[in-house]
Image (cartoon, rainbow, N blue to C red):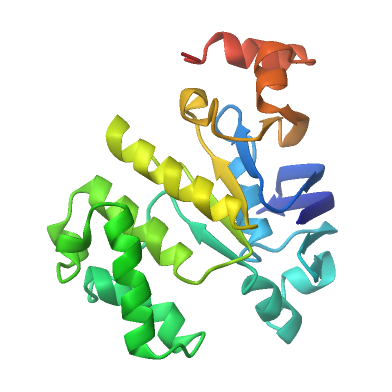
Amino acid sequence: MISINGLTASVEGTRLLNNVSMDLQSGRILGIIGPSGNGKTTLLMCMCGLLPFESGSISIGDRTLPAADSGTRNEALWAFRKKSGIVFQHLHLFPHLSVLGNIIEAPVHVSRKPKAEAEKEALGLLEKLGIEQYRNKYPEELSGGEQQRVAILRALAMNPEALMLDEPTSALDPIRSGDVRKLLQEFAAAGHTVVIVSHSVRFLKGFADQLAFMGKSELIEMNATRELLENPKDERTREFLRFSELS
């Protein structure tokens, strides 16, 4: 479960999140939508313990990160970070490691998993997304869509309680987007929580259990996906959806 209470964050004096609160049950997929520059990626960064915040708290499972610990390097922050994984929009694959090396790096060196076990699990993940034949290639040898799938698998390999993804299908064709969607549904069905920031309402429709709309650095509304799409309560949500491709 993820619980966010009164989260407020600023960067260089600019308020990026303003008193955001939400609860998300385990086994659920949340899609976050809204115009660019309204705090969606900032929210993901805070939820993973990668960006300090001024007030409020974030809980994932049995770990809570208060604002006072969010800008430190103490043990509480490191323990909180282990609860989640994140896939950045710009991927950040390790260029000096092969596909297989990228996926097993954290399980082996952070979780101390035996290398043979980590490789076996990584190969199973690669097979699910149809890129097992690229296991010995390096990121520069892959297309953007292939790199994106590797980045998602690298995050999944740590088996986090919560997985955050920023525009996870931006470089994928419809078939590969469907593969990623199926994989994430399986991950959530196993009791994990998935949070996805996406400009594609079409991708999230019929896939996310809930949608959250953000505007002006605030959580405007959050509801079951169908309810929010068909009966948005706020005019700002209605205006955004009028310009979104829903079918």
